[in-house]
Length: 208
Length: 217
Image: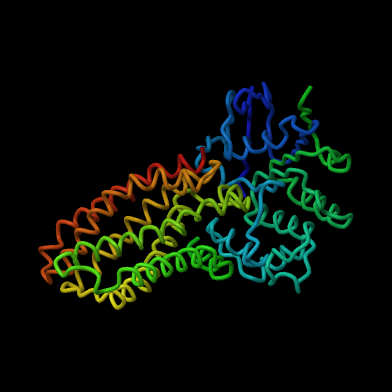
């Protein structure tokens, strides 16, 4: 897997007259987990959205480098995996169908067996994989979201409160996912949960 | 993307129900009130062609606009943005809208011809016009649906943006259908066919350049 490094400098984001982020800088690099903390409304999710490329900054710059080569913006999505509370999977499809769809969209030829293994690894029971996601609990949906975020083994993993809606076992699953990606991926976790904060090597606190 | 759209639609049946029921209700109302015999013979080609496309147009508008709004409503748009290239998304959505409109035409046009006793001299030219019209209408609706998806009051906005874009298209489709009713010659329908084809081409090419900007910003 190729490594990706993201440098961001003086990032700012405004929504109309309301400024959410101002002058945030940092670097996401492989083998390093960054934890983003701050009170509600301080811009944690916005920062992840900017880093993922689903939002454009009002000021500042974000630079993706694959090795030493700059990665153009339209290719960022190919190296990013992201799970957050404002993202959803298709409720009318099963977990397996969702994962198969997102793998195909990314041009991956994952077999049903591989996808099943990934979903089971994230704590879903094999008997639940073929029923519609609309019948799942919020914790089960969160596990499917995590699965779609990592189905392509991304070199950049952005997680927004990954243990939200998860029970104690789910928190351990999320922790082991972070542990698996940590050695080779650039990782950012937005959270205020003390247990998730402990995953980080570096911390950015917003809203100061 | 197209396969997912079809699978989702077969399970939820939101667009199919909207488009099918609207089309059928309008058709039955028109057939009941006007019927085949209320129109003078010399007016039949003009009126029947216009009524056919009005029914198809409004039925299409009721279903095609959902294609991106449903992604925003269900919070799947961001997941999709991160998983696929904009062109893959646009291509899948366009193909789905074309299929939906083609299904509507296949169901509604023969029924309309039977109920309104609409005689068509140029059946093959009419089929060609329906096919090209289907692509042009679906391409316009898909692009407008993408533009309005994140706006509040998207239903109203869709009508405001789509109607002026589709008006020239509708005029050409009505003219072409009228010609197909009265003449079996391809030469008579060709100007309308070329006009609709050109509009479809322009819309598709513009969408290829415009969609990535609309989708990400």
